[in-house]
Length: 188
Image (cartoon, one colour):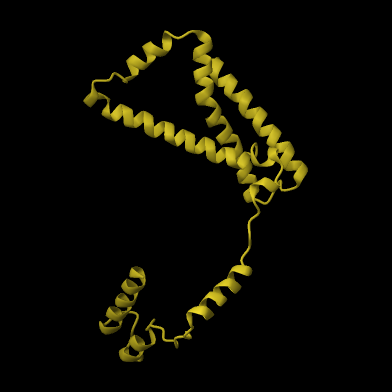
């Protein structure tokens, strides 16, 4: 709306001042009138009684699409479907980042030691299995979100919507994300 007004006011200013674009053959008043962008149309409303309004609303509700309840789907499609887990891992990663950086921000005020040296020393004192487990818990959401993001990019190109392909790629994403997360957890 603001950009439209700026453009209209610039056109009006250009029409009133001498310019290279407007010569003497084109009257400036005609040019400024033809550049108007205002619209006028009649109002199309009707008065309804409260009962008629409720009936119209009920009619409109009948023509709206209805999404099915999640319980009609197979459990492996709803609970282990990659789409919901992408949202869960993305939300979990975001929440973890907010908690960590919020803690890092208020730690000096509370006297906590969450600087890098303290965290490295605490993590280094853990046994190897605990280190690997913690790194796996951090790495798996990243890898799953990454691999499933690629899958959703293929959905944007309208590829892979056949049911056998959905099942196959679901297994590929779960297995590749788990293998990649284990590799990241125990590689360093």
